[in-house]
Length: 92
Image (cartoon, rainbow, N blue to C red; front, side, top):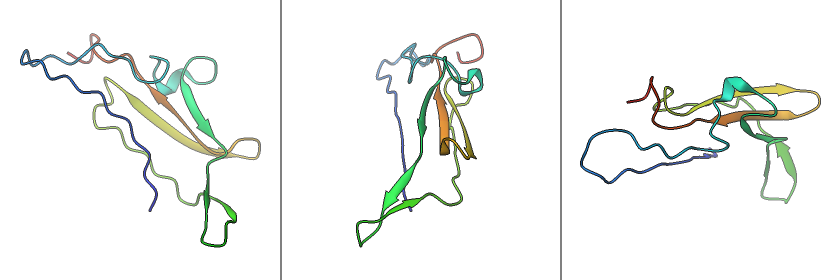
């Protein structure tokens, strides 16, 4: 199993979400030119060979604050868009 991750921490006791953005500050659904992305995802095996990912799964714990969308195509291989603005009207 391979895991990628990002974390934004708010240690203030106010209980509201931080306005710290993740990635470019745009949601994944805004796509190329707006959202941040990784593409051509591969792993290195024990013999030092590059292996494309199989069965990529994505998860966002707070999708109204930050989200992620994965996909695969012939140009980018396995990829995902991610990001978000943090605190906003849908993420108090």
